[in-house]
Length: 418
Image (cartoon, rainbow, N blue to C red; front, side):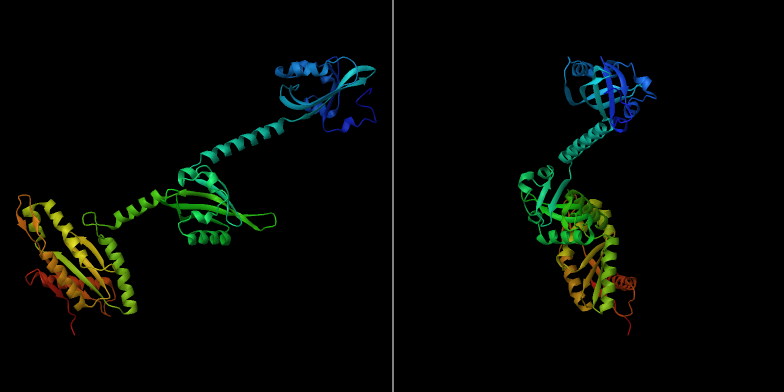
């Protein structure tokens, strides 16, 4: 070979860089080599020592590869770092062999620029490392199932959440870890119909037997033919979150002292029941209860004793109520009961039981003195003309007023005029 630029040379059009060196000095190169080395003309490369262009850490290896005694030889491809004429470093995949160039022993060097490839490869390796660290250290549990619902992959975090090692879970049916198989099936159907679900609720049983609430975020997987191939996603333990939400709801709807419904919650529930009763023409009755002379109890025995009276009074009332009945504290010493499916005469029987039970209560003040309490109760039942709950409340309150002004410690029914 006498020149890289002869009319019949294919090296000119090769995309890879090709150099020729004599005694470690570049004497020829193809256009791809010029572009690689950021040279504007061949003359800029000619006369450049290879040792000056190779990265310091690769120089010894480079010299060993090209400084060989005569004869025919060939070096396999290896990576080396070089510096371009504009002082940019490149990573090259370099191969070399002995040739005859203008009747002299020379070295033919071919090179592929691997800089971007290596950078991408390093980025991919780092991404894989990051994903592996995330997978191994995530608190949520990642999982993947096949189309039949068997778990094929699950993250190590499952041991912290459910108490199982991944090996104990993989290969098992996902539904076997649910508290209720129906929950698993409804989740699967939701995935199949929607393609993905967010914050889907469920319950799982831990290895210890403890049951936890979970929230699932998952999507359906499909193969190249579009066939359902399984589910992948993550789930997290939301037991504590749910308990906190329930506690906040309880605090928002419960009277802190007596542990029964507060005014707002009671009236909301009562409104719902009242409207249903009016719609379906069923009977409900309201009991308006007021502790007699409660201000005197507070003044004579103190507010702590007064609080104790309210608590025990509420407990006494609850004993006489059914699960379907509603009971709430409207404020101070005023309470209200809604009796479902109950006429005013039936309500009177319940009211009298409550009144007598309260009358039997005994309390002690700070000095050890014993005292009792009584309650007055107003009763009203719904009628067709009661279009709003407020009307029924007014009627029950009117009956309570009658009980108070007739000597207290009694129950009165508010009778509608004929």
